[in-house]
Length: 178
Image 1: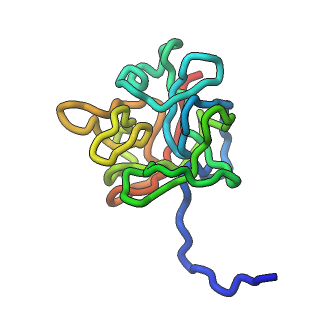
Image 2: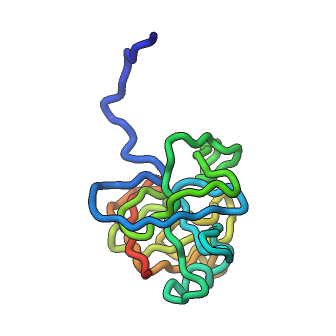
């Protein structure tokens, strides 16, 4: 039997899809037809409980529409394995994901860790990427629409909980409409 002989004095602040804090939360169950990584914003994908990564601005921008509401952020589960894809938008950075058709939890209200593509403060608006480009992937967040050809859309009902000084993990406070 082995023993832990080393440990770090500065562990990671969080991990993708990890719930932050002990406050009230609201979660729903979802599943996808494709691999869905932890910590990504997902939208309804047709059938009851079916979700997918956003593919257009209208998947995100109209969160009050019953036909296109954003579901929330995919939560982590410890027993899932890394999938063979670059899911953070950073070279060589693989994260755990749910395989197609496997059910998982999606946070609608509460605090959860996600990947942000740029420096942000709690005063910045939250935009969700719907078009992958230049290593940036669908379902990640940022503080703007990403240029004049907008590849990210404003998501209401969420805010950055803390500042970060560059791309990295950040906590989102979510309060999506029912």
